[in-house]
Length: 176
Image 1 (tube, rainbow, N blue to C red):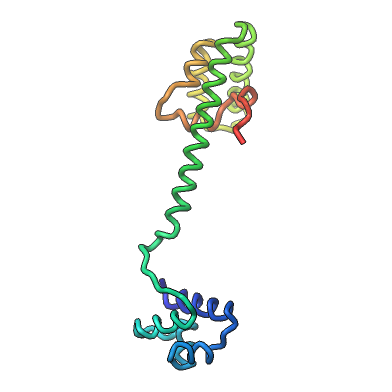
Image 2: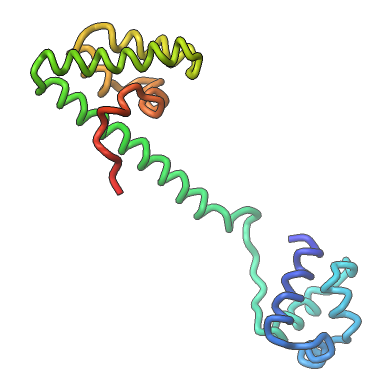
């Protein structure tokens, strides 16, 4: 933590409690000038005992933490949300694969043709990377069974392809 950040934290705590600098100085056994210098971050040679006394006067406890550790739970939460989103995309595509195999052949072929049309539109409109277009074309040109298999395969590109899927029109809605 920088001296400026420490000073700002002390000032915010003092103000939120309605305590003046002079009042805090009296509570902590320091001078008002010391409090002012701490709050502005100008005093860079402060004894630990002085900071501890000021914290005690505010009812604060000083602790040590690994730099960035406060962000770790949020980072883990975001990673878990992203993992859950990928799992849900895989689940929805797998359910579509089953549906393709259970539908009457002509209806299933119509859905595959529609997905091919989406990929063709991406190509003609240049709205998607050629990497995705090439991979989706190859997955859709083998017929219904090949398309269904491609929806459940697990490879290096699986998550990326399912995120940018020509099957959006046929997927079950995402879980709430």
